[in-house]
Image (cartoon, rainbow, N blue to C red; front, top):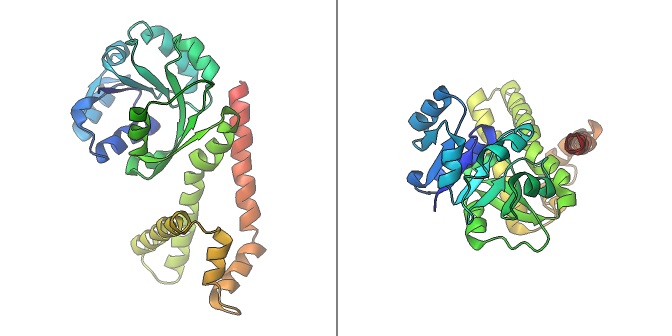
Length: 263
């Protein structure tokens, strides 16, 4: 099964590296990019076959990821749709292109709209698959995507919600990790160790929530001794409005996502 990518930038590149980390044979992954420099860089650093020819990748792929900017989709579809094999499944990585538009652009129903986030690069990502009426996602597609992260099938009307909370939020969490590491440095811990400690804490508490299936508030309470050190810190978080600030941050991205699709 040949997995092809039209575009190998931030998101396309993250998926490619995630698949390689998940032990998919590099010989089965191909990509096309605009420049000779990008082609040579990917071939040298990642070890896959890369072309400066979208049509060639489209014609060879059994699963074809379209990972270019949303404004490029219509022109890309005109360029490659005659080269795509009838049995090929097209997977769109652009969250702002609707299923109806994708079907119109590529003139096929064999197309899937997904919203991944960049941590798929580490095989710890999140991928939302946008549900389409009368569509059954092939097991081989689901199995492939699950190699690089948690997969959820969602109704199309919730795509902006998932874009904000899963697609954008890694940036917000990186800021929180940075802030925690700043606190560590202030307290005398070296920067490298502070970052590692903060990052490990995010990884571990996420695992606690997923594995225990407990509400985060219950897990928080288990750490907070009455009149203790932790609850004093929680009091300060509430005073500084971290909770409401984070909610407003995610909603700002949600509203921007809606605006982007309307353009």
